Structure formats: C-alpha cells, structure tokens
Amino acid sequence: MSARVGLIERFRERLPFGPDDPVVSMGEGSTPLVEARALSERVGARVWLKLEGLNPTGSFKDRGMCCAVSAAVREGSEAVICASTGNTAASAAAYAARAGLRGAVIVPEGKIATGKLAQALVHGARVVVLHGNFDDALRLVRELVEHHPISLVNSVNDYRLEGQKTAAFELVENLGGDLDGLCIPVGNAGNVTAYWKGFQELDRSPRLFGFQAEGAAPLVLGAPVAQPETVASAIRIGNPARWEEAMAAFTASRGEVRAVSDAEILDAYAFLAQREGVFCEPASAASVAGLLKYGAGGCERIACVLTGHGLKDPQTALDRAGGVIPCEPDLAALERAVLG
Ligand code: F0G
Image 1 (cartoon, helix red, strand yellow):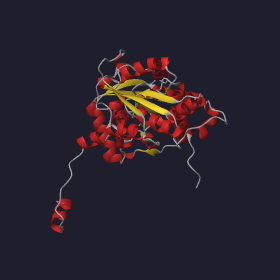
Image 2: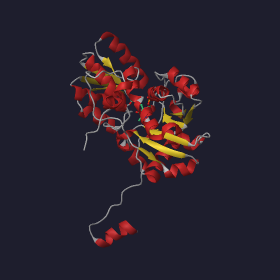
Image 3: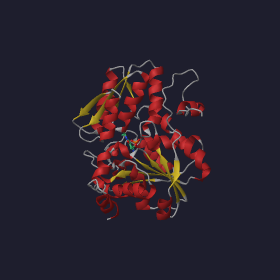
Image 4: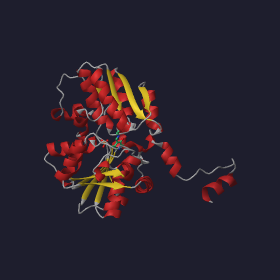
C-alpha cells in the first residue's frame, strides 16, 4: 500500500513550491466526496458533500496550513502565530509542532469549541485567550507581526489560499465540468476566495453560494458587524479579511452570499447527522442550511463543503441530542431499555 500523498506533492506544479523546498505535510487533502441521497431528494438536485473534516486535524485549514508552514520553514521562520475561532489554531499548532516551530494562537474568550482548544493545547502551542472577539484578535496579530519576526498564518497569508484552492482541484477531478454550484460557509472569507482561485485556474466557474450566520453576516449586510453572535462559533466573524475578493468571486460566478439563522444551521446539522450519517460542526452545516433554505437555484449538480468535523464541538452535539438511557445490569431491564 502506498502512503497517502500530501497536497504539495500531489499538486506541486500548481503550487509555489519547488522540488527541493521543505515540505511540512501530514497527508492533508484528498478528502472524500460523498453523494447525499436524502439531501438530494429534498432539494431536487444531485448533491455531494465534500468531507473536509477528514483532514489530519479535522478541518479544511490543514490544506492552507501545510503550505503556510512549509513556506515559513523555507523563509527560516522560528515561530508562527494566528488569530482564530479555533480550527486555524488547532491546525497551526499541529503543523508548527511537526515543523519544530514555536506556535502561538490567539482565540476569543469563551467562544472556542472544546475539541479545538484541546488540540491547540495538546500540540504545545501558546494559547492566548483574548478578552475580545476574533476581529479584535486578527487586528492585533497583524500589528504584532509588524514588530516581530513571526510568520502570520491566518488566511491573509497567500500561502493559505494556495493550499486551500486544491479542494477545488479535487472537486473538478471528481465531478469534471459538471459541477454547477458550490455551497460554502463564510467567515473570514478566505476559503471561498481560495475555491474561486482554484476553479479559475482550471477554467471552471460553478456558481458560488456562500452562507453566513444571521448574527454574523457582514457580507450580506454590506457593513461590518461589531458584536457578531452565532452558535456556529467558527464563523462568528464581523469583519472578514478577504471581504472584497469574496464579493468579487460571488459576483463573477453569478452566485450569492446569504444568511441562515442559528435554528436553520442546527436543523441542517441534525439532518446531516441523522439522515446522511455525517457529523460536521455547526459552521459547516451552514452550507447545507443555505441549500435547504434557498434551494438549488436551477443548479443540477451541487457540492456542499463540510468544513470541519463534528467532534470538534462535542458540547453543541450533546446539547442538541437526546439523553442516554440508564439501565440496571439485568436482562429484563435491558429489554425495557432497548425495546421499550
Ligand atoms: N467552517 C469552519 C469549520 C471554519 O473553521 C471556518 C473558519 C469557516 C468555515 C469559514 O472559513 O474563514 O475562510 O471564510 N475558521 C477560521 C478559524 C476563522 O479561525 O478557524 P473562512
């Protein structure tokens, strides 16, 4: 059996890395694209789910981080830093550990899912909990790196987008030119910008449908949101860094950016878990919530990007799910518990 090949090795001719450049990889990318039967039936189109939660640290961030950290090593950097709602932090911490770099991650107080916090800590990053939100954190780290020789690995770093565009390559590989539409959650707007770059490099133009949470929907409102709020903590962002590029991509693709409520996000989250057998985190379910709410828009073949794994945020799952059934250790009690 051959080892799983990482992004840079797989797509090197389309990435800014030469054959002798250092590569920090954990076999990221090559994620499953699965057909979603129940969802297809509901929306009257063929729908596929791109399971980005199956990347090494459980989110799509690993695609970008592989490239950003490899470039940081090439530049001789000794440390990386990012602001994060959680997944970038987990990914940066893991890839920094693998590269032997120091990592610092700045996360908003009380708004990071448990699994992501555990990841950042276990990989040995310096985890700074900011008394502020993601937008505050990003503004501050951007200032900090102007004064210190630390590589910023947020998606304002172009290497992040280079890595993340490879997901579009994989979709084209899997579905050819037949992909009409892409549904994707939008937070800091790096990922949708990266997908568009990837599609454009292959001369494809599926319509991009981006979805923000109602309480954190600056692109939909056309103005920054000072106090973003949503159950989908990963996309609790009020002032996206890639604002203009993302809006240009929606326009050029004849797509749209729209809002979904927390209730709609959680309904889609439960639908995916219970009808498709797919456990994603709430932010990821925003893509499917949007598809269910607004319909396929005339598209016949659609891919929904499920950006992160459900295990990232066990608390939201437990809060939503039914309770467990206690049972005494005898057969009659077990029969009642199982069959009753
Ligand atoms: N889905 C998940 C699970 C995310 O973690 C993020 C962003 C997004 C969607 C939105 O992607 O920002 O490129 O538009 N998470 C960042 C983080 C902000 O810090 O982990 P985007």
